[in-house]
Picture 1 (cartoon, rainbow, N blue to C red):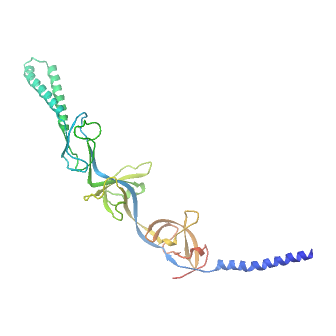
Picture 2 (picture 1 turned 180 degrees about the vertical axis):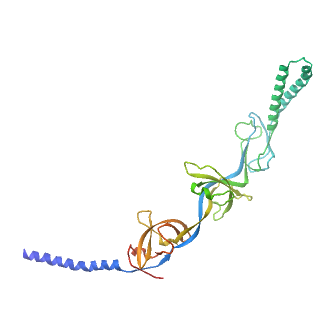
Picture 3 (picture 1 turned 60 degrees about the vertical axis):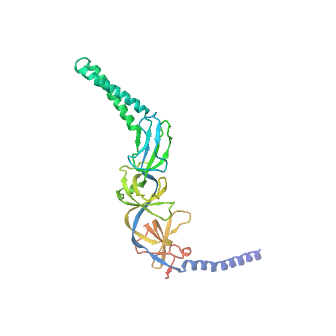
Length: 337
């Protein structure tokens, strides 16, 4: 029994002796001075740049449609891809119905002309003349409408993008042609409400499309919607894009970049801002009087190798840009060049 107690005591003493160097080593780690490189925060003016996606649309587009249905198409003078000018005759319709109605009008006009002196002499009642005059005026409107529809002029200058009928077809509900003006284009961007005071008519907007990587096209704000969308908290901004060389086309997917002005911000090297493991929080180590301070920050825009700090740092403070694995809050550091 005594022998067993002695063995236990000896073993305990050996464990205690072996533990002391480890504890000393750990204490030595805490007090070890870590060499770090640092960078100072600076105040810079940065542009407030916002980018929104949009679809490029024709500046103007029109369906070519006669006012009356049930007319046969006599001739379609253009096809898809053809260019037309405003006022150019592009469709003619069958004039059989027009000629019939013109004959009816001539007959009514003749009747009216013969009845007028008879009425003036008292041979025809006022009521009969009023009815005849109303019928004549109605027929004039019918003929006028048919004349307007016997030839159809292009409402805009542009290019034909759709043709839905052939010559001889009976016109129905679908437009005969579709025309787009593409020497100018437009996009409608939906901008966050916070920037409503920053957007002005005439403001420059940069347009980029995937089909021309690295190229930028310049547009200008042409219209601002005076009301906001209550559901999305955005407002519509129409941007007009010159397109005389017609490289851009309606239907292309575009990114519209607005410069909303400038603001002064605290900037720091992006390597100084670290992401906390397991969360979206960002932090830096501020170096002051030879000690590292762990500090949460709120980051903003990234410009090159700099990042904007919205909260958590002041101008002129030094932050560590190396040795993050060895740093902790309160660790002594030595700044090296």
